[in-house]
Length: 243
Image (tube, rainbow, N blue to C red; front, side, top):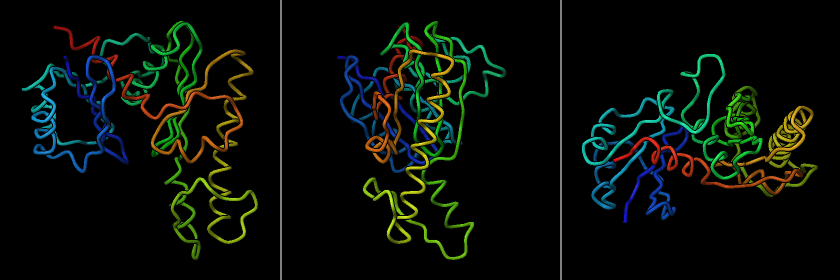
């Protein structure tokens, strides 16, 4: 059995997915990126391969540990990918976005795919049926919007996200929930409609840590997969971490 560790270091969470012979076995939330944390994972799972997607300034010792004990690959603009990136300055594309579109191409080949990542920001990532990642858009995410409502007003509180709320809020909390979450849902659907004017037939894939707050309120047909980024990372690892 061959084990691969797929690390996703995002702005909000640090996560690691464990794959055994291509099957997702576990997803672990990491408390930090200290060398001891990474070393303990290596000792626990004995991986033969590893890959890192990072959009933060992580501890550089992480790469040294993984490189010393596994066939390690750091996802960046130089990685071998099953997609092309005919956009300006491809080196500026976030590693997480690359992993998402690779997953879409592997799961739904020869199709147009719009991948919507719900994390610190909302990312819209469009890859066409020719496996060309054309780009997309970025807008503020859920937590960012809740913080903005609180920090740019004198009296509105900072509230926690909750998928259960009425259309018509009856107090400050439910007013904010309805406005922010339903507002984001209509944004997502509106942008999807704009893509539909240009591409009549495409998949919409929804993923990310905040996915559960939106899926019940979206009217469009979507494929919801919280582990999409890890499936993309595993696929990229298999291409780049060859024996």
